[in-house]
Amino acid sequence: MRFDALMLAASQRKFDLILFWKLDRFSRKGTRATLRLLTLLDSYACRWRSFQEPFFDSCGVMREVVISIMATLAQQERIAISERTKAGLQRAVKAGRVLGRRPVAVDIASARKLQGQGMGLRPNAKHLRVSVNTLTRALRKAA
Image (cartoon, rainbow, N blue to C red; front, side, top):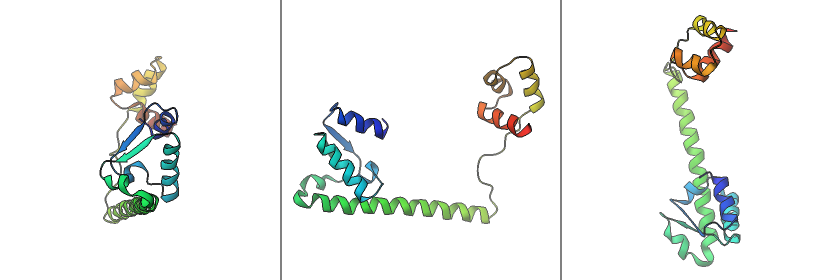
């Protein structure tokens, strides 16, 4: 279920509990956004639980403080993952590695011939054993 659909279903009271693995899997948007979402769930009379962090249930008056800290840590982890990924990609490029998929050869002449015979894009791609997107990109590039 997409997150927006989940929140809509919660607002329509289609269920009364959301169980998520950890708070950082529920939201990595930062403290304010996470607190806003959890408060919204509370307003829908929809309870929520963290499977890996059962202490949220017993935080009492300190619950919002603990959630704020955890949400901030989740946001920082998201930033750190992004930075590590970008650094790894930069290292790979500097080391001479070519990123992305291997190029796929498309027989443009055959594709155009099949188009001229009235064959549609999907059957044409299937006949040439390439994806529709690959064939579309190759035809655009050749034009």
